[in-house]
Image 1 (cartoon, chains in turn brown, orange):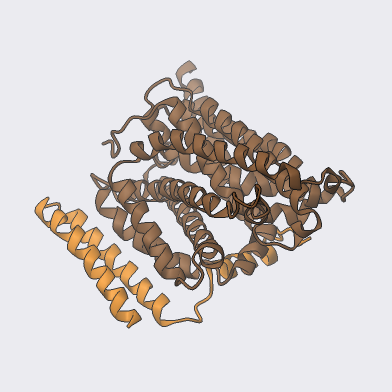
Image 2 (cartoon, one colour):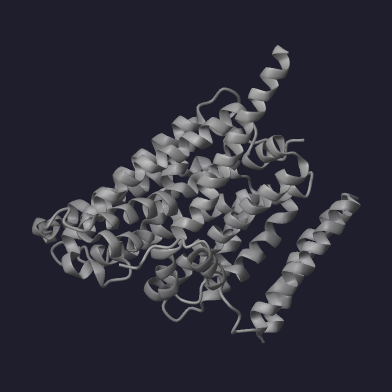
Length: 367
Length: 75
């Protein structure tokens, strides 16, 4: 039985991926610490690796049309092992949702609403996420189109206004770091923001039959990589040596904007857009978790699980990491491998098993 | 105070979710939901009570770094 009957367009999916990726702007600090002023190039090298991931997801979705990741697991591995795989994905989605909620909480606590308790902010934020899921994810996916244009427009606006503060010399020396730094940067970019689009495999069945989910996910990723590299370039040429010191490079670089002393404090506008993007990303992750949990437990509707999952993510976000520093250290060291275990290893096992099963079936049919 | 807020929050969740589940007469779903509710409530009380609880990252990191030897060195 289908748990989700909503429909979305291919373009909504593409813009959804774009918004999802733009919400990861705060996480550029993970890469900047490793590849310094060459970080902008990591968006492109990371894309090459992320496109491989998308190709794997697309191959799975093509073989099992109109099925989501959790349904595919059960079809490939059977009821029991399929549920074990699904439970692993559920853990991953909940962890990422909690990490993102915590990231936003830390951001709000340090930059937007100093003095506001972290729990209060995350609680309000997750209440909106739960409300959005209860009203239907397709509404959120439609909203992604508007949100994408707002985010892209704000980026262009910021870049134009900051042009008088940039110093192109900050880009030098180019590509002088040890090779392993570039490998680390590439893997980190591919795994942490890009590979997380795995969550969209829970939404793609809403596209309908014979729709190109993989192509739309790849296009969304390509557009977001262009934005991401522009953001990182802007931060590098604006902040220069300060880049390695500040915790939120994107936020700090926008603080430099001052047009005739009238247009200042643009970062507050940026914060509103960022919170909206984070809302979209967390909604997608929470939706993937709720829908997945409903499927594992054979519920007829996912709706009753939204509030309790939201409550779980709230308390999970409070212990998922102790501090922003710990989160950053995690992002630069173990997080890429942790993410790739779910984004690469499990889908590859699923695809390989599906291919072997198909080959065996063909052989049986021939005999 | 924090215990009261936590329990009040869960009371609101229960007030919103349980009546719908009871009305729909899906006993199996009601039983599973109740189990999840109790588990999440217990987890929440633990988080609220124990400020020294290990973070998830602190648990996962040694597994990847020390057992699987999968970790980047911080630049």
